[in-house]
Image (cartoon, rainbow over all chains, first blue to last red):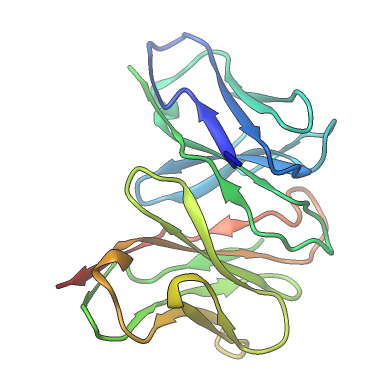
Amino acid sequence: NAGVTQTPKFQVLKTGQSMTLQCAQDMNHNSMYWYRQDPGMGLRLIYYSASEGTTDKGEVPNGYNVSRLNKREFSLRLESAAPSQTSVYFCASSEGTGLLFVYEQYFGPGTRLTVT
Amino acid sequence: AQSVAQPEDQVNVAEGNPLTVKCTYSVSGNPYLFWYVQYPNRGLQFLLKYITGDNLVKGSYGFEAEFNKSQTSFHLKKPSALVSDSALYFCAVRGTYSGAGSYQLTFGKGTKLSVIP
């Protein structure tokens, strides 16, 4: 099993350009997540999808949109990139999420995005 | 709102010595606590979690963590450090309250562990 895969690994954008980060998991997990990691800030949740067909905002959703394409795939779109979105983006998945579901998350290798 | 504090940005320890990486938390309801490790240019890897029960939780690679409810702490420990343990360690918490963003993990800022040969 590949686990969680992300494409691309690296990307450089100019301010105002758009792009989509792709994420796929082959573990038959119900829940998927997008985080950004900035130095000294830890990981912050951008959006998540508790199950296929649902998406919800996390801590820092502004400037991003997501699509849960199917159970396997969860994409993150930057419509008009800004320098403040320079970061490392991680996708993760877990068996589920909810009051009674305390499952660990599995992370992809990350996408390093620079916006100039 | 829930929060996690990792009071040390960096911890240095000699190889073979015991190591401790500190974590304190604040959460509504019962805490569910996690430790993750991140090696350079990699994603996070799950080490262990506390849900309920025994206050000492054992995890991967010889790591363990001690849950202390009165001190709201969940410190990561290992009896004998290896050079290969050098990495960035994250503590995370989720609670049991309802509302927007419920049941999602909140991560600490991370602690860089350096094990010196």
